[in-house]
Image 1 (tube, one colour):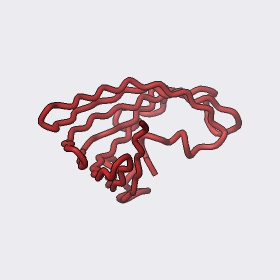
Image 2: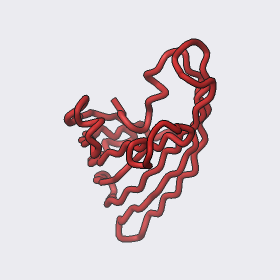
Image 3: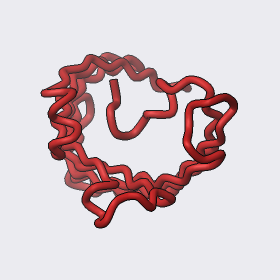
Length: 140
């Protein structure tokens, strides 16, 4: 479960609009750097939200190393609830996680592993640590 970046996938009675700006740099030595900024608009289609529309901002950065058939990355991502007015400070309406991932290329197939660590007490009370498996397929 992607507990900061993909809440929209796990809520029912929510229609979400998501648009993202992603930047990725791949250097000649194998260094990879990137960042992401994405607004996410939630619209209530039932009784899931207090307000009919909510706005979130997703953000993150990563760094890593890639060679011909191996990749390792570490990164940070977060979510801010922009339209929330009930909290006094920004820290109460933001959630963050650290991600460490590695994958190995087998032709077009890239199996991998991930470790996600919540960095906020609100998240770590519910989810301690997440280990995941991934599979990417490079299309021709």
